[in-house]
Length: 140
Image 1: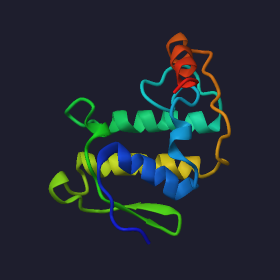
Image 2: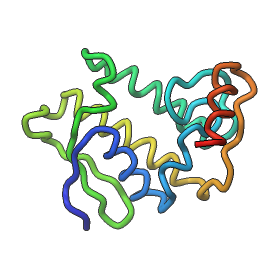
Image 3: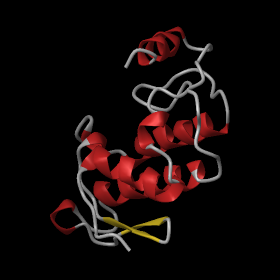
């Protein structure tokens, strides 16, 4: 069992690592939806997980723009499974933005857990903007 964690996007990376055992950055720039500003049509199941995650963040409706990338929340990794805390201390209770974001990240991690760690990042060809982003990611 790992200690409780907090710190926005770092939580997401750690949660993915907990559930999948994969290096979380392999998903950055993967397909049409994994990473920042997803668009187009998902290229596969992993990309569909990321599309659902984007939708979940939209549903969470945090009132301050981009709060979903920095708002801390508490969670634990127990036997390769992420669990969100019920109370997020000063960041809110069960209906708080922190709680909703934690659940979105947990659902993404569990969705990605269904797939083996990707060895390559597929390109998004259905969105010119994402195709350009994917091309840049080749050099990062």
